[in-house]
Image 1 (tube, helix red, strand yellow):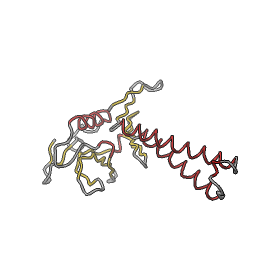
Image 2 (cartoon, one colour):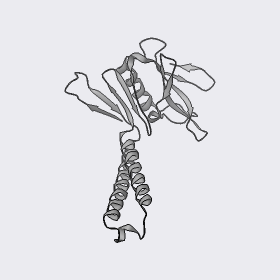
Image 3 (tube, helix red, strand yellow):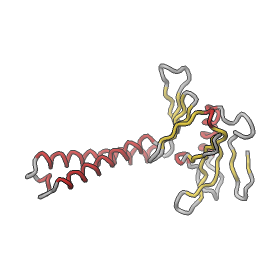
Image 4 (cartoon, helix red, strand yellow):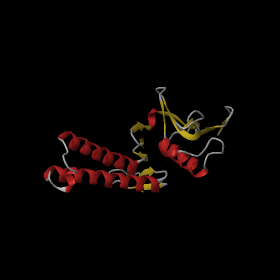
Length: 187
């Protein structure tokens, strides 16, 4: 779940927290291999239009679409391998499936563990980063289990470690909180 990297420039280590690493790694590498296969196939078909790679009568748009799909597979594969939360130099970088965010620790008001709909109509415990500006975002890669059960202790501990590394949680406003069903807040 936690990977430590040492930087030659910084005296403090940078930490990377990853969840479901095996799934993301296998899926990401598979996507990259499929994408590279599509790109090589398209290049071979373009270089030798009468070969079996060409599939008989592909147009220029077929090659463009094939290369585009191959590039999308490679991009998705790289994103899958990099999913996680990275802490370094007083900043938190969350890498999700489609988006990467970097926020300075001084911009964070609180990190709370709240029930959130995962898009399938089921509530899950997911950390929410609340910024001083009033904006907030969810860290989906720290899914702590279904809302019907208590949050997974090892994931909650990792979130508390992130808070400690960032210096978030020094006062009552910034502490990691779990909102219990019914609105009660446990600290």
